[in-house]
Picture 1 (cartoon, one colour):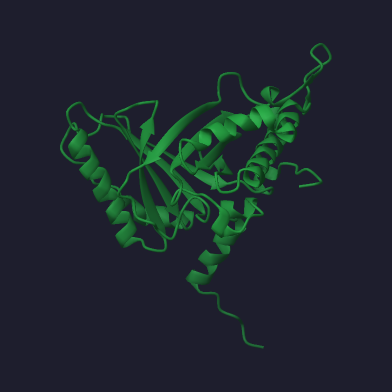
Picture 2 (picture 1 turned 120 degrees about the vertical axis):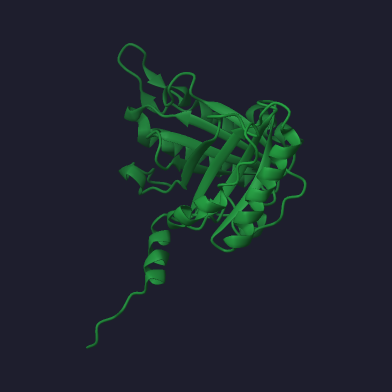
Length: 272
């Protein structure tokens, strides 16, 4: 019997399949999902779980996302991600809205959706003999939950990779230097064009502004087929512009891995 040969490409494909993309978190058809390529708004929400409640916290996150996806089909799609290399037990949601108007549908869920209210109020942990049981707020470190509202640039292009089907989503942002707004947007667009042209099928870039937060800040969502692309991608991200285009030390990158139940060996609900 002859020995089988595994090519580097086949080995890479196997690595990708170890962690499935976020689309596998939803039971909806791909055509019914909103993602970074077609949503009118992306809300990035992040919270730091307490280590002792890492399993319960992930169960809560997936439960909330599943309910949003089933009840807000066409209006909102939520995916859950792990922070790949930074803080352990830091959970990220990307909530994709059809438009800012959809926000009110999400607010009404808290008022009118009985199942959603019951999920939020559910006792999830035993908080101690003196304080009894605790709901979702016991799962997170106090003050760690925050949100950013991202609005896509009007001239974005529909790319094959997005937050639903990418193996890694890279959040990249930088503060714009005073008086460099026009130049910073040109640089940001050049970076996005470099990624989308040179890495078609392997990576894509979408540009966003931040609503309600830092007005002069540029955000990229970079969607990678897998982590092995990042080393080659860095050259395409190296466009800087003139000194002062972006504020020194303001560039941040956070890699997100779509959550699945094998990560960190956390427990899964029996009914999930």
